[in-house]
Length: 387
Image (cartoon, rainbow, N blue to C red):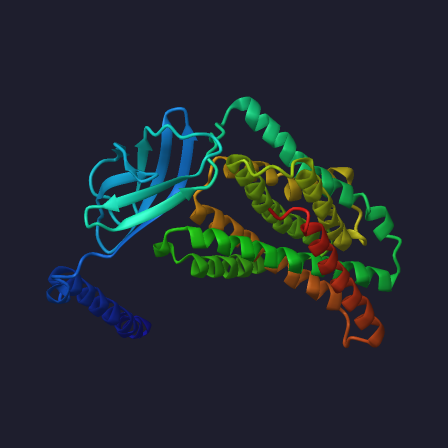
């Protein structure tokens, strides 16, 4: 009897799917709109994902968009046509990439304008504002960047964790203030991450629907981490500190991308001031990690692991940023970080309110003050690191 009931249910589920598949097959094979666009030129779109400069000239990675495969016919550099090589050759399918090599004698410090001309006459322009040789991934250079990543990531987080002995001496009101301070810091990091993710998504190919992708990935990661973190109840203590460190680590990966991009484009005129700004900014993140552990007994090894988890992602961020990471991948990584930060905000907020049947006037003052101070301090230290 039960098998008989399952059969009609399975048929009800499969019938609309089969009809949808048949309708899709007919649309693709018959192409009923073909008669309406016979005289309409194809829609073309081209995204400059990477531009490298070296002794051999200019090298570009391009991603095609639009409705049909597109053909690159000519390339102008500073109003002059130049011979080029394309790999792979031929028309570029939708969402596919090609490498273009231009033996152009660029000059360091000059600006150059590149114009791609397709076989339909559509043009796509890219400006190199300041021509500089692209750094190569040499072992010595990567080691130096790793040291820099440790300085702006791991070291300041470790310094922030050193405030733990002070935090465990706080009274109830003081602890509420610090947890709310953590919420303010994390809220600032969330807005900062989403802003950077949207910037990268706007540079990506339009077919990726960058802003929508950022929001969908952030929400998915948030829900996934909530499900994982609450398998054994709401996280607290060292478990919550680990989630905070993970979210901050993904944020520091984004900061590493910014530093690496500055290195690749030569926008490092701020020098030591920029590095110092990142370091001061990240000290507060160590305090945010330490706050939930005041009722636990973390070991030195746990502190080291948390500092590495939160700070070390800045190192691969600098590496990838200096090698011109494709914008859609950067947006995806930052969206993951935003989802992780949002999950931490949810859990820390639940920790602040846990066990409170109502918010008293006293608690309101501590919570509001801590949140405002957290956001304000992160904003003020952030002034030193925005390029």
